Length: 259
Ligand code: COA
View 1 (cartoon, rainbow, N blue to C red):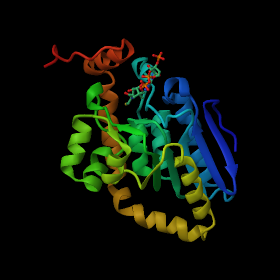
View 2: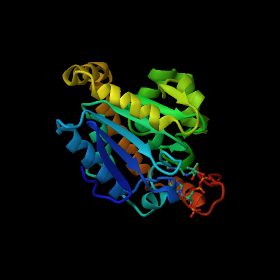
View 3: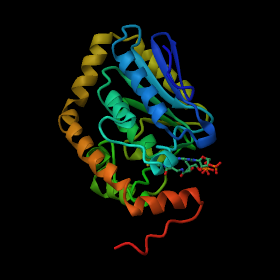
């Protein structure tokens, strides 16, 4: 299976497709071309009987630092026709198991995409963050709906409103992760689970995934759409422009002038 983008690698072995985000000089920040490539790989894998499981991982000691902020500042869209939305839908609707292996930073969609994976394993030095409010944005990819349900309202408010970093053990405690392993071992553990899943009865696995997710799937799409509508507007806001410019200029954002 071929990726359409050099910064997204695809490798198939024993019916497992491994998708590797490979832009380490930007901590694997995701560009539109990268989202498109991942969406296409997932959509092809969904219909390919030769693929039973997908692994999502990142190269060079990072999972992903989320959306490329320069892309966002440059006006790239997140509406329903956009590559980011296409990727979100491809993973959200993916009918086969997805195993995530997280090393280093998993920021923004790097954390929220884990809510749509079936098993997530992280190195013990992985770092998670959903800094949407810090950036003048709002929660995305169903996180405003799913997080209160998986971890309770208090913790979800803490992680989304304060937008603070949290470690792998906290991510496991709040049910974002299945397992935390010693640094450098997440990928081999994820590959082990993927091999195990690929050997199971494929229809039974797919049906079980569908049943496990159908409760949230019913409401999830409407939430993703509502969040995406707000998110797209927030990208045009002065608050976001200040936050993203501050990141590029390596200074704290100053929101004191906003009402
Ligand atoms: N978009 C664009 N560039 C990014 C990026 C992103 N999301 N994340 C990192 N980079 C760039 C940095 O600007 C830096 O560029 P430089 O070498 O030209 O200075 C380079 O990648 C390396 O990142 P750096 O910040 O030096 O690495 P770090 O290990 O100290 O921190 C992060 C890693 C991920 C914690 C930090 O880069 C970060 O917070 N990134 C922004 C995450 C974010 O807000 N994502 C959007 C969510 S909606």
